[in-house]
Image 1 (cartoon, helix red, strand yellow):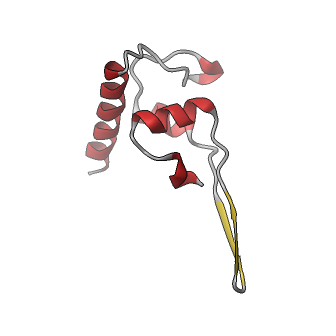
Image 2 (image 1 turned 135 degrees about the horizontal axis):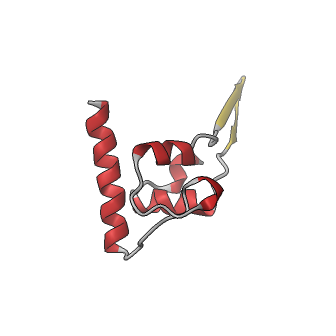
Length: 86
């Protein structure tokens, strides 16, 4: 099941890249270009993304994730709203 979900994510991203005529994304280490992103590349890209929510009594404090430009672009290509990380 996990492999099927991973394959679907890869397929959606690559299809979106073709539709938008994007030949590659700088998602490899040192911002090198990647023309055929895999699920492992995406996991590495988002590995340090953290969002915190602290509840103290009736008060809730949210520390939203800080996404860089390429992370936001990948989310856009995958049709995932950035708001999901806020």
